[in-house]
Length: 232
Image (cartoon, rainbow, N blue to C red; front, side, top):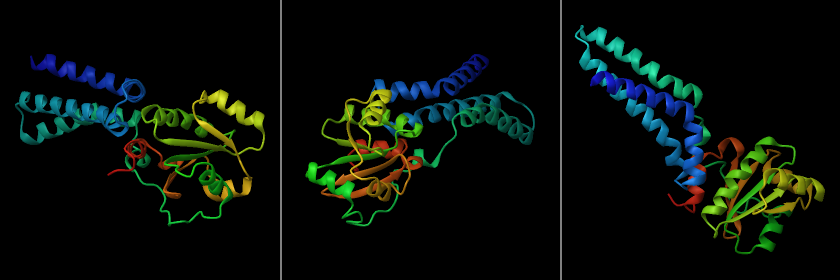
């Protein structure tokens, strides 16, 4: 029985490691599960199965304690390490806040002022993207999901280009027609707003920017936080 349980645990760990990205996509985009909880679930599964196998090995061995410890450590490492090699933990996936923003820090910025003028009650996400940026294109999938989950959330994308045809091509390529896109009102103000980093994301509430994330900060926990209206 122990051998069967041990073998099953190893198989499930391998499957979780191989298909973790697919599982998270299904959990987030099909089942609408919490962003961060879905990210943590495969990790919890792998750790739980690893501990189970370590427990089985510990009780099965009759050797000295130090030998059992070595064997259990080797088994645990061989089971868990592949998952974290395939799916490294990045800081952006476990932090929710991005850059510190001072109140009214961006007052006078042409792009920001245009958003507030067009949407006085704006409560949601502003994204700044570049038509030639692969990370920008990939991020549209998450923005679409945020809108799909909460139709009260405002999401606007400003694209760093002055040409309508480039903007249209960007929208078509990302299949993000449900999002609201705008051309740069002027390139200088857009660059100042995002510090030249594409993509960049901002949460606007009560006529001011209250949070700012660069691409390497905009992970699962930040998305879950936005999904929850920035409530702790």
